[in-house]
Image 1 (cartoon, helix red, strand yellow):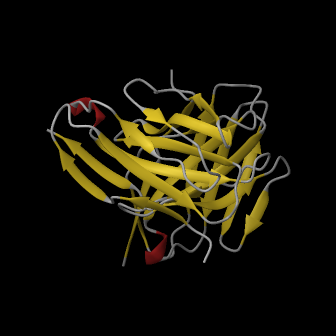
Image 2: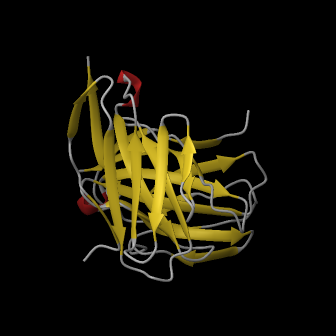
Image 3: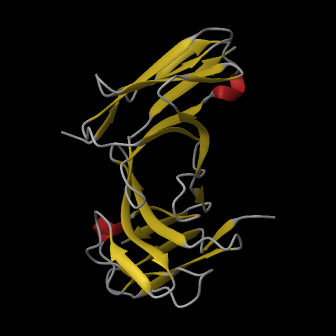
Length: 109
Length: 112
């Protein structure tokens, strides 16, 4: 079983749609959680950190459920520019960050 | 501009021919690491370094070497590349003790 699992997609949604991604992790000692965005053939870039209380950044909302060991990302009012692969990242010490394989999103006109 | 640079960006080589991929960061970060990214597997850490002259293995270190003689540079060395090392490689850096990583643009390596 992978340490960080994501639905690979692809998710194909129309502009304006709301889309949600989930990610599960296996290490209960995990301490920090993130969503990274990766455009095709480019490097990953931090989208947002995920906090226990949940956090929002514009159209993006991230939530963490420690009891069930899953993280979610909600994108509202999808834009064409949101098309990318979204990577779930889990860290349980200063050295060790574990990446999910990513969920691919395509937003269509 | 704060950045992580990698060279070369693309490389096609043959089995057994030693190669080095360079990585440099201008943010004075202590922590640097190398990842490989393969379809369906996500990014997997090859080696990391917590500071100058301090390096350690990640999850998939076999067939790779690194060195950290200066804080800004962290080259990845493949002494005898094999086809299973064909992959997309990313270098990353961060301030030690923080979680936000800054990635280089990637090096696409093909070993024939």
